[in-house]
Amino acid sequence: MATERTLPNLWHATAPAAPETGPLSHDLTTDVAIIGGGFTGLSAALHLAEKGVKATVIEARMIGFGGSGRNVGLVNAGMWVKPDDLISTLGAEAGNRLLTELGDGPSMVYALVEKHGIACEAVRNGTLHMAVGSEGVTEIRDREAQWQKRGAPVEALSAERAHALTGAEGFSGALLDRRAGTIQPLAYARGLARAALAAGAEIYTDTPLTGAERKGDSWVLKAGNNVVRAKQVILATNAYGGLFAESPWQAHTRELTILPYFQFATNPLPDAVAARILPERQGTWDTGLVMTSFRMDQQNRLIFGSIGRLDAIAEGTHRAFAARSLRKLFPFLGDFRFEYWWDGRIGMTTNNLPAMHTLAPNVVSVSGYNGRGIAPGTVFGRALASHVTGETSAIPLAETPVTPDTWRGVKSAFYHAGAQAKHFIDRRF
Image 1 (tube, helix red, strand yellow):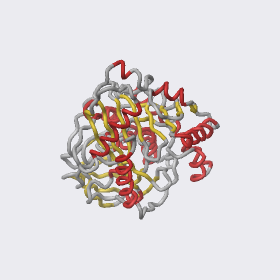
Image 2 (tube, one colour):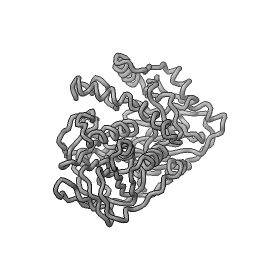
Image 3 (cartoon, rainbow, N blue to C red):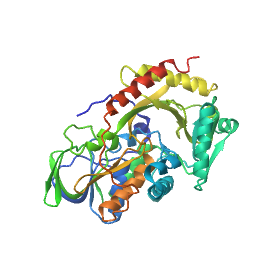
Image 4 (cartoon, rainbow, N blue to C red):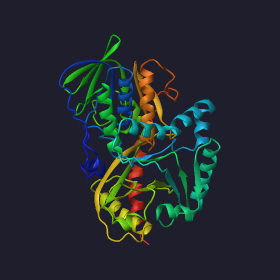
């Protein structure tokens, strides 16, 4: 079993309590076994249960243990890849379908929040892609043109307007996407779990999947100390699929480069200071080579993130960089301290697009969200639910074979070391 440091995570501290779940303590038979209790798996469970299909979630740790409990909380539309590049990769028909479904992804998220009364600090005032220098301005204007020709409500803002909406110094402009917004990601995941349970799904936590055997037209899964029999399996583990070495169906993880991402959250800021930072509460990320992000939460904490892992060696470098960055961005900030800090894994694919695989008979997965987990995870969860119940065209991706990235380990190490080196020197002067 993989081990990692226990860090003080803001989302864990402020999310409403998770619904009561526990380890699987008996053998069972289900229609669909879902491996992973994050956005994708919980969305799949909810939509299956609403169809009257018996769905069982098997989660190795706890609800939202992986990326769903470590996310920045930006509910973005589309993928990180520009629309024209996405179509060049997938073709016009498939590309436009994916753009449409993921472009509507935030609407789906906020509709679920409203329908199920999920308390997750949901704000839908858009997101801001902050431009760094003239190259950043060129990038956001290109994105604006590509999205606007598809009818999306996006707008490139001047440096002055970007400053007014953020209070931050040093940016050359921003792209406002009004489809998007922010949430407390773990609270959203826990809300999805509660809604899925209410609809009739079952969720078992602290229950790792450690074996699978095909018997007839069903799978016999070793889940914790017990057995789950299912005709269909949805694998929804994404970048956290390798936590247990004995888990079956890890091939998809070999095509994911792990991009580590950390976040630091301040103490609640005084009202007069907090009112000057993102007054409309958009979330942001920038066009920098080593990306950074910042946003506020409902308690007036300022949350800053960037690429890097908070291991025992690198934590001090990243903490100092985060503090320097906030003082540069917001000279009026005054005294502050970091109350929470945590990190997570982003699963990156070679083309920066998600991939759909059939890993074995009746075992399907979608992985590789490339930093866009919330809306795509929710959308693909619903699509996977439809797929395993017979709607074979439900997933807006063509099935592809797993293509291992032989350089993934080298690239992952480079991202970690490179970010640490850059953060050691960045914004010192």
